[in-house]
Length: 107
Image (tube, rainbow, N blue to C red; front, side, top):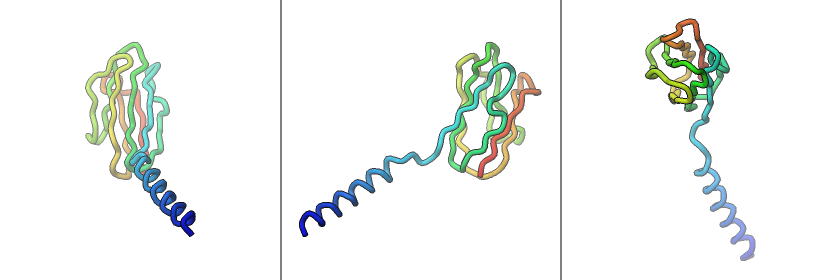
């Protein structure tokens, strides 16, 4: 009987450790390169942090069309992150190059 009790205790402790070690939200990376966002559309769950990384040789921004988020100008290899806490569709663009567009769909 003692081995069964010890096994149950170890199982309970191990599942608590596993549950607390899991991340609370996902991370998604969008690159800015050759005057485009990649991927242009990203589908993510609520709670996801999206990080944009400028891989282009010229500066870019990441600006939500509805004012939800706005980065400063990002030079090569600089990053901007935003965590999406609400479901919805979030179109965005580069304010330096307005034809460079993308979209985050949060479900």
